[in-house]
Structure formats: C-alpha cells, structure tokens
Length: 238
Image (tube, rainbow, N blue to C red; front, side, top):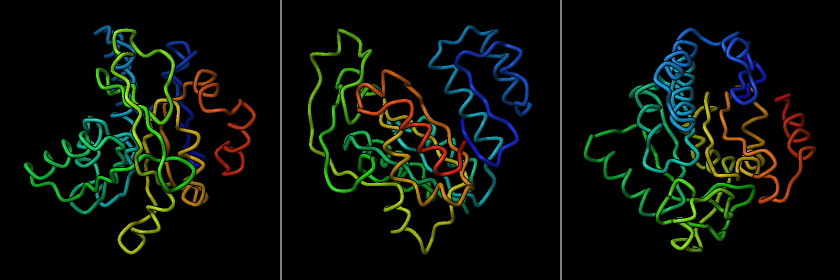
C-alpha cells in the first residue's frame, strides 16, 4: 500500500501484529483482528484488508481503478464506495471474465462501472497473455510461479489487446477526475502497469494498493529491486 500523501504506510508482509496495527484506520485494524480470530487464509485476509482500505478512503463521486477485475470481487465493492456519482474503471484481459462481470452489471442496473477488456502494462497494442483455465486467478501476461500443479495442463497462451492506464484515462478525460484509489492484482505485472500510469501518479493524489510478488515477480517480468524503487522515487511515491 503506497501513497505519498497518506499519513501511514502499511505493510502486511514481514510485520509483527503490533507494528501492523500502528497507524491503521480503525476499521482496517478491526478487520485485521477479525482475520486473526477467524483464521482466514492469507488470500482471504489480504482481500479483507484491501476492502477495508478503500472503504476508508473513497467517498461519493470519487474515481477509482480496479486492475485485474477477475470475477469482480472488489469491483462491486468499489462501486458502492464511490456511489452513483462516482466511477469504477475496471481492467480485465480475459474476455469471458469481462463478459461475466458486464452481465452482472447489466442485471443489477449498475451505471458507475466501466469494464475495459484489455490487459494493462507499460505499452498499448497487443500482448501474449497466459490464461490458467483451471485456476483463472493465476492468469497474467507472463506465466507466474506457484501455479497449482493440477492446473498447469490447462494453461493457454492468448493474444489480447493491451493498454496503459494513462492512455485509457486520456480517453476518459472529459468525464474522469484523477483516480483517488487504485488496486492492482496482476500476478506479477504490477510494476509494468504502474509504469504505464506515470502521468496519473504524477498528480500525487492516488492511493495505490498492489500485490507485490517481489523477487519472484521480478524474475518473471525481467526487472530488479533497483528498477522498482527507482521508478517509485521517480513518481515521488517513496
């Protein structure tokens, strides 16, 4: 979780119980305690923390980004947080998942979500995308480590449209303010997506939550620790 203008920097990984709780908004710390008491799995726990963060940050009329919509776990929560006057911009590379979420949007009569059926990276055009059919949450631009062995045989390589966050915000400029919040869960592609959001990040107004696979993601996507921190410093998120 990174925001240059926030009063706190929150890291779950490698933090003790006490240090994690220090500086958290009250509803985030209460969810942390709830997660411990219910013995939630790591994945469920992280999703609860993300939900509590955007519930604390977003207000009616805000714009936010959901990078890696999947089945819309956070897309619809974000929609409620920004209200009818706000906007959720969701990116989903897999056509069938984007269609599934759009169907629910239509069925529920929701008007503040825009799903962009493209992968996000540091360039626009097209890109090869790794779909893990049997475990679609592991799908990403490149094949990540840690895919369940039973799902490896279901991997398909697809050619999909690719865009940058900056390019899409330029297209929406007339109706879109600077996003207040952005969630990125791209199975290792987060740094490249951030690089494609440089102009947005330069406004220093967006609270960013991202999955950080650290060295595993760096190995797969061809960057190193210095690349990561040099970029964050360059956009003043240091």
